[in-house]
Amino acid sequence: MKSFLPPLDHSLLFLLLLLILFGTVMLYSASSPEKSGGPEWGGKMLMRRAAQVFVGMGLLVMLAFLDLRIIRRLAPWAWGISLVLLIAVLFLPGNRGTKGWLWGQSIQVAEAARVSMLVFMAALLADFKDRKDFRGRYLWPILVLAASVIPIVLQPDYGSALALSFCGGFLLMAAGLPKRIILAGLLLLALVSVGGYQFSSRIQSRVDSTYRVDVTQLEDDTYQLGQSLIGIGAGGLRGEGPGKSRQKSFFLPDHHTDFIFAIVGEELGIWGALGVIVLLGLLIWRMMRIAFAQSEAFPRNLAAGMASMIFVYAGLNLSVNLGLFPLTGLPLPFFSHGGSALVMNMAGVGLVLSVARQSQDRSGRRRIFRREQEPAMENLYREPRP
Image (cartoon, rainbow, N blue to C red; front, side):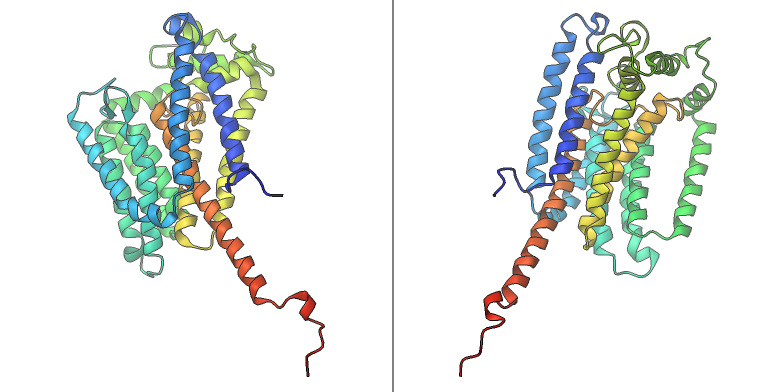
């Protein structure tokens, strides 16, 4: 029986839709208290999220049905445009101490840059996969990574710069980067982190406040993280119930953006928090399964890069909410408010859907070819004609 569904990876698509639905419900709940912006604020946020999902779904469908050869040819142009925009925003007025936005707070350029950077790196790694020397195989992808990260550091947006560095590093590892280079890269990252801590009061404040937070005696620089931990702890096993968070109404800033996971933990308890982690884990696992199933370099690198992107952003956000990592300002994929992040995450899933669809098409064509080359069963035992 012929399926009416499009020829896409249904497991990955189902997990994505489930995450978007769950995230939209929690965003509405986190945006509902009157203190957030009036009694109608939750409805406004819901309509805004619906528009963002519509745009993201359109981009996802377009990329899912776009030929990988076209994506590969467009990769340097997309990255070049994003790099120009990353440099251009440095000359625009900032917002809350950073310069990374276009049209007020409508588009965050770093969010678009992460996808275009990973696609271009995946293409370069595939182009140079037959080179034996490190310089010929990995130099240009590393330069693309560095050129993308430096303007973000200058904004300054250290959280996004760190996330892009991790994403690019995981992609290089998936492409076979030698272990000695990985260790050298980790050492360099550690030295840069120590240097940043010594010379940047902003980084120093965030690191110090993370590891000396005391929920019984909160100070200005530990207040946000402390309230996050209080909210997660107050949820217990079953939670306070949907919409019944007290933290979002009176205590926790950025409860619908960076710290929405704390609202999930407070309202839905440990089971709800585990549900978020499990769904994100299954999505990443499915994307990696698709990557490992590819025999060609570019599709494998592309799918692995998009999976690493979701993994890094989710891992850093959850670590911040739990007090395991300093504040980064990164959203939780598919949950936090932020149209740029949501659309780019959906675009990343769309690229993996394109990889899965075209690998299925190739395997189907190979099966048809083998059947055409084999003799028909009724001819196997037929007596030859004299």
